[in-house]
Image 1 (cartoon, rainbow, N blue to C red):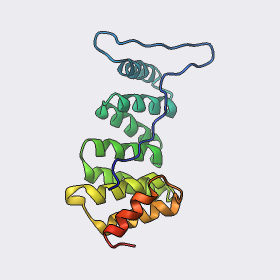
Image 2: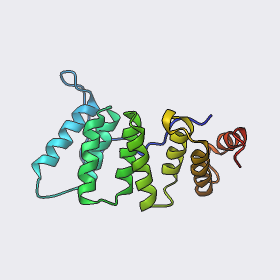
Image 3: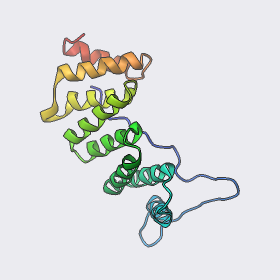
Length: 173
């Protein structure tokens, strides 16, 4: 069975830029990622006239990596207020809702992603996973449709064999 969902996050949130080296250590029970999220939130609120989408995405990614899903959700919604067709923000909200076990909202966000970008393969994959595994949203035919579209977009996927065996197992080809 195919399990898990895709996430889109940078490999490293803390990096070396130009002449600045950042090294964070936990302070009073705050993890380094949590501290970075606090610092980014301070920077964002200190510049209310300017909206830097990349700064909001970094803050949201940091909150997400620190399992602060409500804060990450808030950041992504701020991005969507300025850029309502940002497919990455919609996708990440879908992942957050999945993590929060709110599969209806997760489905809605992934559907929004593919309405914006029909080639966003990971959204099809995540929709298939929800329909293949999640209680009231379990629907073999819907899962098959989304898995097939994912494979059309990603013919060399590492999950190809697992998906094809799932389709065979349920006599859907």
